[in-house]
Length: 88
Image (tube, rainbow, N blue to C red; front, side, top):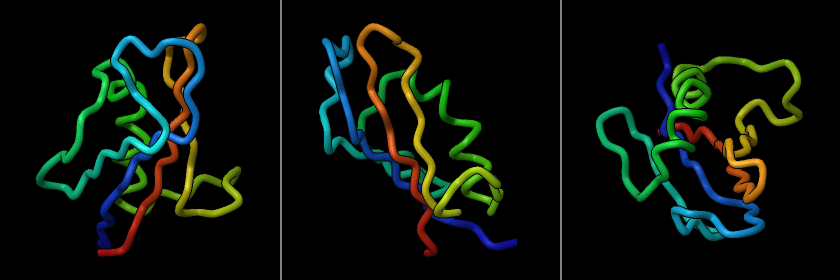
């Protein structure tokens, strides 16, 4: 089974993020470590997608099979993340 590194990057932020996320913030999941700072609420919401993409899941609605987006659960101060898998 092929494994991928997954890089999550903040691509949009509106309002006042309580954690302080800003556009350009990055978190890297390499299967052994998590590098970077991430809000626990956002992490819990997108972790299933990170896990699936790490092991090659295909989502038919994605234009690019290696790039997904995910919105943080705070509807009043939304942060949007790009979830990108990268071959190691």
